[in-house]
Length: 347
Image 1 (cartoon, rainbow, N blue to C red):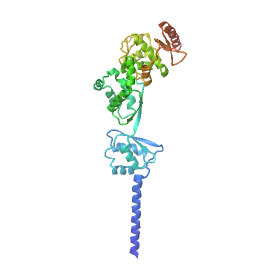
Image 2 (cartoon, helix red, strand yellow):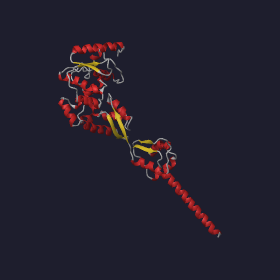
Image 3 (cartoon, rainbow, N blue to C red):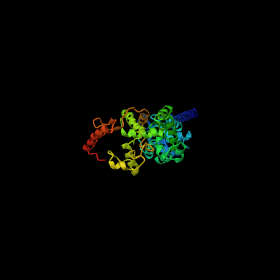
Image 4 (cartoon, helix red, strand yellow):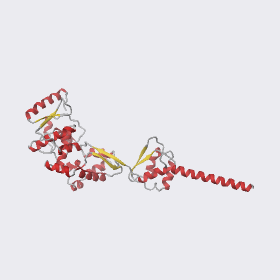
């Protein structure tokens, strides 16, 4: 009888121990193990990262990193983490987290606009994907690549159409550049190409003019009219005489694109640069900035009129007064110059 009791106790202890073991295994694998209050958190795994690097990011997010270690090891994750951006949702178990890290690389939305140089663009993109600004700039300026798509160095910025795009965070510099080439070709569809041909302009010329139009006015509804002025000037073989091109020439000459120039002086018009449209006829060799799609389409769909001049309208901020004759333009210009002088804008 006594032996039977011992056997029963041993069996009960065994069952209890087994249940405790199973419970620990279950909780380690399937119980919630997140320690943050937000709905989700992101883990960024660099290319070639070790498990230790991933663990450092995970530790503040988890209640128990050791149980995660065991599950990750059992599921074979610790050997070769995959690069990417991964979501960890509140209430996830270790099993869920490992599964997410193994196969659910989550895209990021990348956006950019109004960059004045490839270097500025590289800096903007490097803050949104894994590739750093140096590798991006090298990819953007790769002469072999530019030659292969028949772009000059001055035209390289045209490749990047401002918009929002979906990329994986671990996209390399060349992968980003090559994807943007596809987007460029998609943007320049047959309809837009036909409109450019009707204007007797190439896509590069359209974008060079669009950049000027964008710098001239921030008002999207006015851009087709401004585009029409410059197209009229091109048709008459007149100098474009666009102040933004002079400002760009000055910035390019000094290499300081942070310079703020609110007023173009007569001495500025003498700078010897192919971007100075007061000295050189036609369009500049490349864009003076990255034009928005609205500016590109404004050039492709210009307002038809017989204006050849325009100047800022001091009574309607942001807009301009347009004129057909130089005489009328000089009258409008006098009002603007008087206003600028009253504002004591000297540069």
